Image (cartoon, rainbow, N blue to C red; front, side, top):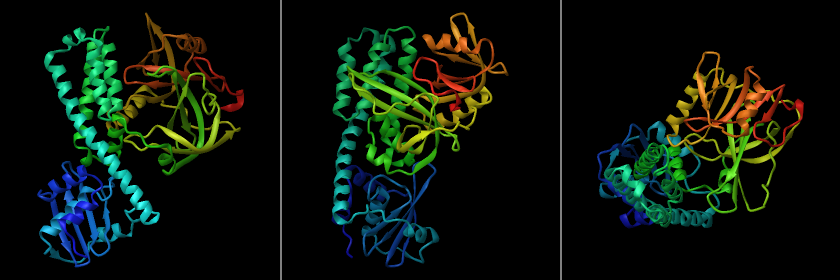
Length: 442
């Protein structure tokens, strides 16, 4: 088969990947390029510490690359082909073991024949067009954030609401919906008590996100997914349900509800804990107006089923592929023994996903202590964790404890814990209302 630059261009899923492949083909990152007349292989160093391996069967357009990019073909495959077209006389040799292993993996082309491949290619091109819009928006976002910092945060107090809403609208046009929602919240932070600190924190997170997005293709795949999610790209439920699942018995550990940004939109966050896997999962549901949620999850009940997790750097959100009530008591873990153990776990999660907003926290034995107007959870080592609840949950927590240690579950946002449930008298009890399960459920 005769390879030409035009043929390689036609294979590219979108112009963004093609441009990155073109730049990569001129770089010095490629090493160990060789071939045997049928196969072509090489190794490409990333901008970080990783090396990606690529192998191409020249006769039938079979491609393999261990970068696991969501694009087909990836920039490494296209780049190696471009180098081959420019200099077809590569070093001869026998295929290395890694090339042979890559070729044994499932084909890179989607299953389902030529028609399915065309549909997948069409979706990839459409996503690529969206990605190009997003990249333009990210460059604008980065400059806008730098301008805010240059003018000083005190100037943000004087900005009218239209200043924030106008730029948020431009981010929506650039397909950066999640960034737009955060920017619309800037106007509430500017000028509020402690607002400068919160505004600076939000600006820093968005700037870090823009930097990650600028080098999206060089990031590990989980971080690529996370950066896309944080900017507003969400996988369809059908895609998520095709992911590998975790079979377990899941305890409904806590639940929190609230109002969404849009009128009449409500959300519900339900936290689950796996009995064998000891894994936490988050079910996120939405409802409009008076419409009810699809399913009712009673705090303290147990559910047997398979969970498919949304891809990401620290996967928490999940969907049930199938589920049924479990009548026997839950026999899972009792939680972090100390607050130091919890802090270590949270640090690991934050290292994996620097944009993590909510982290599940199950504490095995803590004392609720009120000092002035602040409520704390204190472990036996004297370490303490601030509690953010100002409503009925605070008083329920103190009442259930009665000065005794208890097992508590909540949602940690990096600054304070929102308590959601406690274990009392052998059963899980929600702290802010909701249906409680039978006494023998735990």
